[in-house]
Length: 477
Image (cartoon, rainbow, N blue to C red; front, side):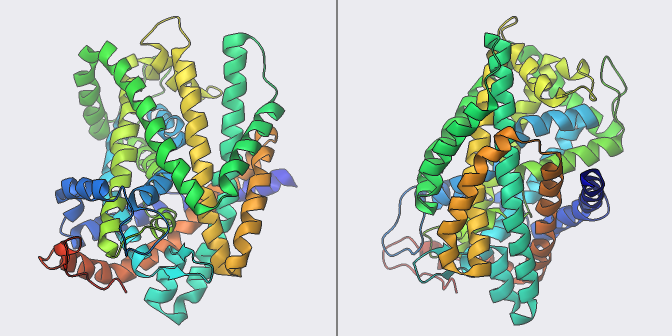
């Protein structure tokens, strides 16, 4: 019976994430929003980073729970995850080096999508009786589109609540346990019991999650920059060792993106269609632009103008895909390992990334240590971010008093993923993660005129004086 159920879920997931539903809808939305914003996300990236710097501290009189920087870090905590390590390797194994180019394309258009998500999240957010700032797709659907669309908001909240236990909890702890056990066996010759990993994860998760969004934001504000920096530095060291191969790697990415790549070594070859398919799918999975998850975190920001947080939102895909994923991709390509590891090998994606990092110091376990550390930190941060997402969905459905019980249940579920077989859970996670996006994308397209108007006002002289003494503050409501 479980096999039949798993087969049905995989079929539904394949349809939702297939070439006729979610992927074209996500890309179309990104393109429409980019054009509607007159390519502002591409033109104003320097301004966005200046806004990020100014958002490091809470400003008196600005309502919210987290500083703009910590709200972004909470969003990135859920975004920068195993997809940046294993997902990139999977894209290259299945679609060839050209898949990396199409990952970049999804990120460039995803910047506009996340800008709109974060802007709408702040504009239509609400305050609960106990002072929590709640927002996201369910709130901008309800408050922006009106009462007749409440059913769509409820659907998103249900999908988000279920997805938080799958993609944001069980599957992450499962990845942590598997990689820690494999590392201990490879390096020390002793297989660490997954139960021990489960206990450690439970303790660490409880210390952070039970404290609520402010503690999660504080931990994410430290953990995310540190873990990303460690991983990026490790990648840059490998690229420095193979610096002579970097120009060729870029050339190979562009050539394969438009010509495909023939079979070579263990690589079975890939057409242009496969490069596009796996590049777009893995890019969207990595940066989550359009999924509707990130605006839930951005809604907590202490900002008065929604567009300011929108500017931080569009930094998300840039850091996640253009920076971190590109580092992973270049390391894999310059190492040459991508052409040697068969795509159908057991655990081939993780093996590929570890071997690629090991190439900097042959005969060492540096790659295994770095990849495992990266997966552990990235997965743990994802758990923190998705706890916020699931909690906000539960608050929308059941009221603010349901928040603490949800966090307790979410925490207790953490160790289960470390010791259980999760084939069915992985399928459910992919399915519900994809289902979340559909209500959100409909809302983004329908509310895009609101975002365009707010953006025009922000970039007028009056709006840009918001942070100056006595400056005008456009009404975010």
